[in-house]
Each structure stands twice: as structure tokens, then as C-alpha cells.
Image (cartoon, rainbow, N blue to C red; front, top):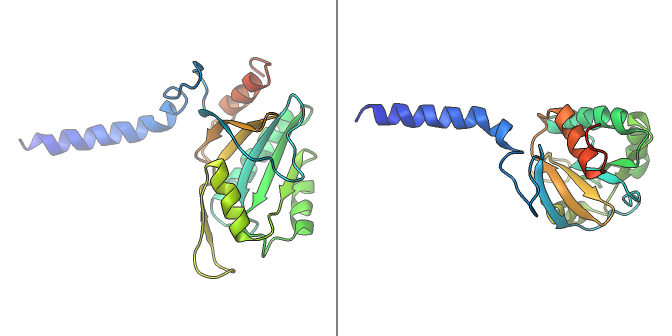
Length: 192
């Protein structure tokens, strides 16, 4: 009887270790398997100023410039992905969750530094940014007033030209080689 809590603890630890690797194996949508990210295939709204390229993809991230936690990690991931896909019709779209503090000019400056295929989307206010994030399957909640930290999901969303979210990545801890394989598969290129 005393071993039951120990077995339960070992099972929980084993599941915690295996969870990051199981992400792509557990998801099956429309008969498709083998994606590293979560395969979804759901409609999402188009993003103003960041139309998905014909026969291409948008990789979308909701964050904000003054975020000091997950945003810098995801932007590093996006930069590495951009460097791999810069000659292909793949855009990397940063949607600010803090339009009251992130000007379009500042966002465009950051995107220019990151690479030619980066775009910035700035909704009119936090409520609109929050609603847009929600439509993509993300969340955003402000802690306090307009100058406070914003809790958000830090997910990446891969969207095809028909404005369908095909794959999502739920963590900034990514195997970028496997993400590149997912993007190549979505672009019909096999492994890239």
C-alpha cells in the first residue's frame, strides 16, 4: 500500500519527461500524422498588412516588445527559422499584444533588424489584440493597468494561404530541425 504513492510519482515523472517528445505523435487531423507540432487545420482571421503569401505560410506569434520572459526566446526561434526560409514564401508575423506601448514605427524597426520576411501587426488597442489572439487559440491577460505585464501563451501558429491554422507549437522550447520539417511538409517540399 505504501508503494502506490511512489508508483504514482514515478508515472507522473515519466509522463513529464515524455510529454515534449509526444507532441507530434499524439495529434492526428484529417488522417495526417507525423507532425512535430500540434496539427489543427482550423480557420483563422487574416492579419492586416500580413497576408499569407500565395503557396506560402505565415508563422504567427503574439507577444510584445517589453516582454522579458518568453518573447525573446520565441523571437530567437523565429529568427533561426527565418534564416532557413528567407528565400521561400514564408513570413514571420509578430502581433503585438501591447499596442498602447508598441508603436508601429518601433515594431517595424525591430522587424527590419530580424529579417526581410518579418512583419508586425499592431491592433488598435489591447482588447482587439486580445480578441485576435483568442481567435488564433492563444490568450492574453493584462496584470493591472496599461503599463503592466501581459500574460500570454507564447505559441507559434503556422497559417496557410487559405487562412487556416495548420500547426501550432505550444512552447518556446522547440526542436527547430523538426519545425523546419513541418514547414517543408506544409509547403509540399518534403524534408528541407
